[in-house]
Amino acid sequence: MNKVIAIANQKGGVAKTTTAINLSASLARLGRSVLLIDMDPQGNAARGFGIDIALLKNTIHQVLVGDININRALHKTMINNLEIIPANLKLSSIDVEIVGKEINPFFMLKNALTNLKKDYDYIIIDCPPSLGLLNLNALVAADRVIIPVQCEYFAMEAVAAILGSISNVQRDYNNNLEIGGFLLTMYDAKTRLSEEVANEIRSVFKEKTFFTVIPRNVSIPESSARGMPTILYRPTSAGALAYTNLAREVIDNEER
Image 1 (spheres, rainbow, N blue to C red):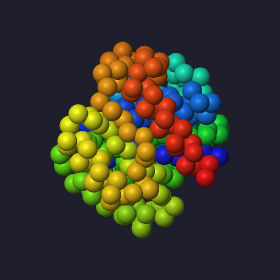
Image 2 (image 1 turned 45 degrees about the horizontal axis):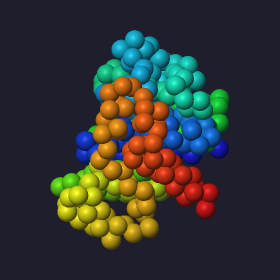
Image 3 (image 1 turned 135 degrees about the vertical axis):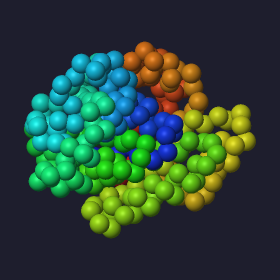
Image 4 (image 1 turned 120 degrees about the horizontal axis):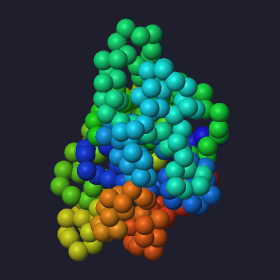
């Protein structure tokens, strides 16, 4: 059965897409079948696998507006067991395009997923840095939400905002949605601020915080620039090892 996990935080620059790419790749390398869905009009999840989104016709945009079946939007990646449904800038206009259509705007993604012919172990959704319609669709469709938290200033303000959005979705649209965990990202052991943010998150959310911490590591942005996950670019780097550990932790949490 598909386990749907949204990677969400309305604050930009907290490593949502980086986490979506590398968690998906790590789960696949551990033998799980994975589908990554890009719900961000910037389309960086597909770029992270070397896919030129400008040339794509079948994307999540056409799926959501009902122009194509979701199975026609599946694209292979360089990793076995991992497929992706990419996005591009067309997705940014979806609010306008669905006006007048007989579509429940909050359940577009959830309804589309019911038509998948393949049964994946994990469906990972890369959410946009906002609390709008696309983010809401991801949360309505998800079983779990992983919240990346950047170890820098204003981290808790961003967490409070996304928790409010999750609470609203749980109340009105998806009472099965659970917090899969808070993920500390861009952690720098040399700075007091990273340690303070990490301690605050762990003290407030305790068992809901992943043991795995994603460090600041040059291999992570370098691999993104080269259009491949970190585990392929530099598999023994601190960044690659951290995301592999995160994947193991996600699997362990699901199997408990």
